[in-house]
Amino acid sequence: MGTAELASRPNAGIDEEMYYRRFTLGQRYQHAGLATSFLALAFTGMTLRFSTQDWAVTAARLVGGFAVIQFFHLFFAVILTSIFLIHVGDLIRRMVYLHEKGLLSGPTTMVVRRKDFEDFFANMKYFLWLGPAPKFDRYAYWEKLDYWGEWWGMGVIGLTGYAMWFPEFFARFIPGRWLNVALVFHSWEALLAAGFIFLIHFFNAHLRPLNFPMDLVIFTGRQSEEEFKIRHPVEYERIAASGGLEKLRAEAPPRWMNNCSGLFGLLAILAGFLLMVLAVSSFVRG
Image (tube, rainbow, N blue to C red):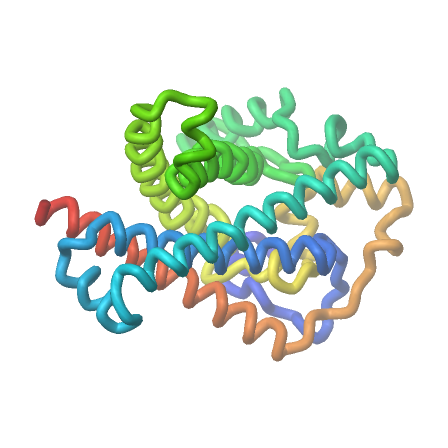
């Protein structure tokens, strides 16, 4: 099965191919919680930001008013923060107690390496028909961009959001006028983050030809051997050479899991695109 055929049949061979574990159950839960809370924050945040628009007024009226919208915005902010802290705690546990040196260096790290720059420029040449497609390792450069973009977003959006939520506390450490600056940063950075996720991340993860119509690996945690070879050839070859493939063997995801994962992903993509349309239309209308 070649690349073109795989792209047209991303879930082909569910019942006959060998599968390998790519993500743990905890990582999948973190991603599901992250995606759900982010969508909820994007919806409630945009509703508050464009509160004079007809669609925002209608949405607020359906749930009981803008005070309810704000409550859910703060509620999901706490959920997202908790997921982030759980992730950070898990990283510390793996580095300190499990001594996983690969988290900071080596082929499986999320830290940007020289190979990521080489892959980027090789991909640009490939897009211009000037060279072959690069062979990716555990993570491609755009996946690392997604990952560190979330850290940046949590820092800027999270800190400014909590500064506005608890102004008396933060006013002890910063001038009060900075809280007005926090509002501006929070609003625009949130819109930038939403645009990045809904347009760039959704395309890279699901809508590009190799993954279309949906890449389910982050939901099921498993990937077929053929997909593994094509999407992460360097990692596959390295693990195969070390004899570690058998340790990663997993059962094929059941059909119900694929169906539920596909439905969740589809709804998330549609919701994201709808929110982007509403945001752009709100800017145009002023």
